[in-house]
View 1: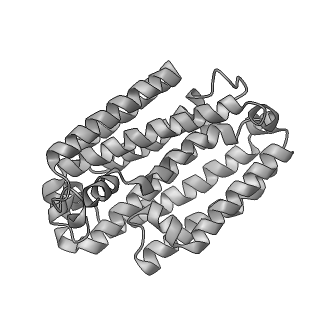
View 2: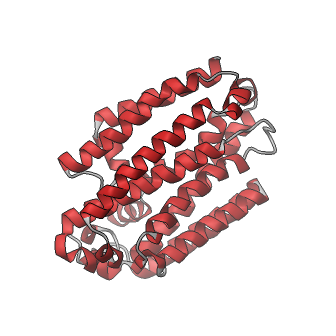
Length: 300
């Protein structure tokens, strides 16, 4: 029973929430089409399942490659492989089976989605095998994973919903926001580990709190501007017939500023997924944003 729990922990199901971005294309599709096409909803769920398996395989691989560094980390030393609860051989087999199954499922859903899954796997492999040591490039590669998820959400339903729409502005927002969260995580690691941070993650030797804070401020501003331009763009108006999405901007502004507050005043930011559940204000803000966006898109 303990081994099953350890394997489940290795897969990090709490991180699957990151894959919810695949539903963005469905959320921002015309209501009359999306609600009348149950197969499109099913395809999005299948795509979500494929990326959950794919991301879990990547987490297992990362833990294998980071075994030595994790054992030196005050928190990560308790991970299944680092603590010895799951062997390297077992983790390798799990990673291979999950990745293979996920890619096969992705190609079965849609060939284009299959290549996106392969690209996601390639980006993460290049990150894990060496590019995670390259300053700035490391967080950019992590952000590309979110962009591929967003584009993948379009791919899984593109043949079922010709009207499917995911603005380039939203893709830009996904990239900027994920870059913001990745840098926040780097900042948390430096603040937590201090001088020993570079021993855990070599690229941290090239970062500093001041440098990261400057980038976080710039990214927060860029995300707000990109999202604002999306809500009032001509393409958005032609697609939805309204510019009322502008009323969702306060939720985005509050969410970013709240995150900065948690980073600077409470020392948070190490795990965005856990923070989303832990911080009630952030969770409530995300839910209100989703509800308001859906109401505007589906009822106007």
